[in-house]
Amino acid sequence: MGTSRMFRIFVVLGSAFMILLIIIYWDDVGASHFYLHTPVSPGPKVPHPVPQKRPQTSRAPSFLSDIDAFVNQFLEPGTGTIYTAAGVEDSPDSTGSRQRRRLLQEMCANDSILFHGKNRSFDDIPNKELDHLIVDDRHGIIYCYVPKVACSNWKRIMIILSESLLQEGVPQRDPLAIPRDLVHNSSMHFTFNKFWKRYGKFARHLMKVKLKKYTKFLFVRDPFVRLISAYRNKFELPNEDFYRRFAQVMLRRYGNQPTPPASVDEAFSLGIHPSFSHFIQYLLDPQTEKDMPFNEHWRQVYRLCHPCQIQYDFVGHLETAEEDAEHLLRLLRVDNVVEFPTSSRNLTASSWESDWFSTVPVEARRELYKLYEPDFRLFGYEKPDSLINE
Ligand SMILES: *[C@@H]1O[C@H](CO)[C@@H](O)[C@H](O)[C@H]1NC(C)=O
Ligand SMILES: *[C@@H]1O[C@H](CO)[C@@H](O)[C@H](O)[C@H]1NC(C)=O
Ligand SMILES: *[C@@H]1O[C@H](CO)[C@@H](O)[C@H](O)[C@H]1NC(C)=O
Ligand SMILES: *[C@@H]1O[C@H](CO)[C@@H](O)[C@H](O)[C@H]1NC(C)=O
Image (cartoon, rainbow, N blue to C red; front, top):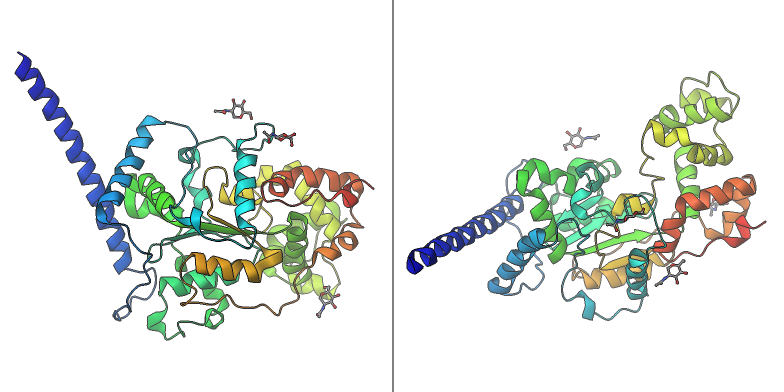
């Protein structure tokens, strides 16, 4: 009797172990499959130079950590498990990124700071909300891109690192040589929301393993200055797409234009475009989110990057982009592969804030602050008292 019971336990444990083995083996097959087929370029395969792999721990510990991650899923259902890459903790940091990470952890743990989706678990984040996380398996990097925060330059760097343009003759070390429309073409980037298609029901498991092992970063900037930048870029310059999708709506609703001009060229030639104040009114209008979620150029960073579900290893500030970039590339161990392009463009400066907001009523500024307060607090930007206490 005793031995047959023991035998049954043995069989059950053995089968569970085999299932684990199959799942983990399957992950590795999946990863190497991706490694061989980079997203674009169906052309002839050129042998890859020796990849700049991060020093790998031996097979055994990483095998164990896979099992850990897998088992954790069952042990901690629904808790917001936080994932981080090992080893980053110990790197020297002169940029203040470490304080920013600590602040982020404090803010996520502080129950008096609330926002939509804050305390859901990673599993509860819908796939389509994971579309800003770009994965580079070659170097073990995950980048959450935030539009209007140097995202073109960081996307260029991610493309260079993925080596997907090697065959097209784009100089390997020059991010600025990549044509602009390619940079923002989503087929150039392997994002988390594409995991489902490639890995099926193992997608979430694989995401979690990658979140645990890879180095994750994002760049942020002052939320109000980001809005000024978005407005300048999308509505002060003629942009047909944004004119049709957003400017016409603003002109109709707030600009006394029941029938706005049909095309952006026509509108600009008549000197018609929504004012900054119209843009702010649009953001504050409850109807806006009812129609569809905020466009990514003005969607809050906490909604794009899920900073309380994903423990970022590096939080860069655009205000100190060059120092931060230098430090980050060293941290990612790719400073010998690529350089962050220095920008000579006319960047939106924080000092313009009071000018820009002078046309926006104080009450609207206060409401706007509430809308973006989580971004201010999570990422260490001061409340703009001079703007909202007039
Ligand atoms: C949480 O945030 C509140 C409000 O900002 C602050 O007063 C409090 O000290 C914070 N609590 C902790 C434990 O940091
Ligand atoms: C999540 O936050 C809400 C408040 O927004 C709170 O009522 C709820 O208890 C929280 N859930 C967990 C699991 O902490
Ligand atoms: C993106 O690139 C793919 C393949 O290179 C191409 O088929 C597609 O038309 C491009 N999309 C846009 C919007 O340019
Ligand atoms: C930058 O843009 C601002 C406002 O759009 C303008 O006033 C300023 O002259 C520009 N500076 C340069 C160097 O182009």
